[in-house]
Image (cartoon, rainbow, N blue to C red; front, side, top):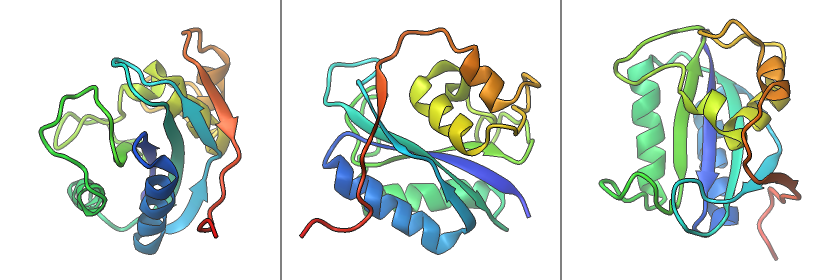
Length: 164
């Protein structure tokens, strides 16, 4: 069964969207592992800070079906299609890897954001430290240890239960 990693992000009502987006994913996938939740500044535009995390899971879905699932869940939580690439998001779900697949279609895998953005690499290294990046041949822990770009990111306390 393929192991996948999905980045989860939100900067609009972020507690709600991260919590419920992850719940929707957990209901569709198996052997789910969750990273900590991290707060980071918006990258590429001026906007509210994001909450980001990575979810690992096993699935019988194909890559195409994984992408469809992620889009369906994003849409369920108000994702605006056709919005500017660098803009606020209710829920942003990106398939980072699908086992060790390397492909350009139907989506580029592994996603470039893994090595470019701390808000993807740090949580991925947290839950998949010893796994190997399909194109660099380095573990995610080694990639994180060698990460040298300046991005403001920090772990945050996150409650998976609804506020009362």
